[in-house]
Image (tube, rainbow over all chains, first blue to last red; front, side):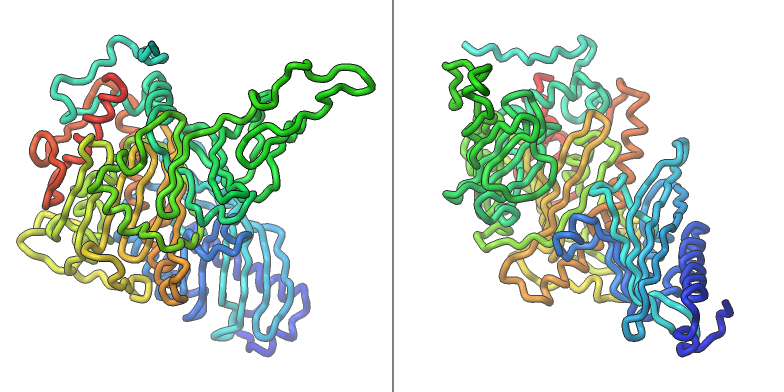
Length: 169
Length: 415
């Protein structure tokens, strides 16, 4: 699928082509995070994009607290500053896998998408472990001639975080 | 006369260093016998452990599953408005009957053989008690009243629920007047509103979490985010309060400025040009009298956090000598408007497993555990400030709260 298409032409894509376009966006998303190109991560969102990591227990009870709350691209850039400059943490590798992609369809200008994710964590001198699993609930729009996230929710299954959650999921 | 000898004997070479609480031997963070004795004498002893906010269980039949030490308990609201706390263990065969964090039931029934209890924990029914077709059944003298759930002592104050396996003094006396006054500053009787939960498991001994909060020294050095924005630094006004026993404490500060001065010249991590791309994340309003931050440590399992407008109970749950769970309950007041709730939720980015501030702590505690694990007989050096501790300090350049904590800890533990 060409990346230089207009908003209208995204609406004309077949289900299969649209699915490939969403899959490419998710691969770009996990790719920049897995490779620790964190500065590229906010650019996959629109300016007023929302990113949240929420424990399933809060989500199911309609409790508003997020473990990680970004209400704009600015919040995301600040998180990158946190990762790069202010936070103190041990070295780690996080690798994310996405499966079970479902493109639910357009609601107005917003494409609703669901997928499962798993993130593996590798700390120094420790075996790789399952770090976090959950569901992406994404709302995607067409901006600058390409697909971008308007909202990305990561609803994670375990009530417990294995110590610290430092990189985006 | 009761025998006061702890049931868990320690190995004879576990002897506290002669310097007293200015030294902490590293075996207290790793030794399974020490851990077992802590469960017995501290968590199952005459201490008030935090278990719930009343706002979590407002209606009759509401319950919350939680922990005291590593033992699961359930806090239940009864029809009279009372709160009962019971062991999460059926009186029949020991089954942990409650498997969810929160719920509501008219009565408590164990799934295994359906022994049924009322909301106060009293046994009200046992299937096949009179047998089936004339066969079996319980003995004629089986007395339901003698087989209820294990009930804990309960204390409530302004919406906060504590419980104990022992018989501690009244909560107000247990906290002591200076700590009680700070407790009432946040819990002033207004109805609370739960905003959500965060839970994390840190691979470190539970005492390291208390030491971290009882240590205003580290915040000016470790927390680049906090110190750069002038949220908490020792060159700002600080006040420490320690209760007469040494077991509880509180650290208070007033917010300062983001600039270099002669007083913070040694804080190498201070970044003067650090700016938020979206400042709405950190837009605190003055909400409480006097201090902008008040962090309280309440023996043996609670940290009460008032960090600007983000309020949270941090409950310590022990998970063996080398891990603890920190269960965060973020809350506001029922009277908060939408803007205040949004402010609390945004500032919550500083706290929890992804907190701009608390990431540093959970990571460093894991480093500490790795450091002490292989050197049980080496000791920590707790020398900052004067050698002992006082009930009030007007600065934070001291580790006195940690020395006070270990004075009390050693007394309880017989060390």
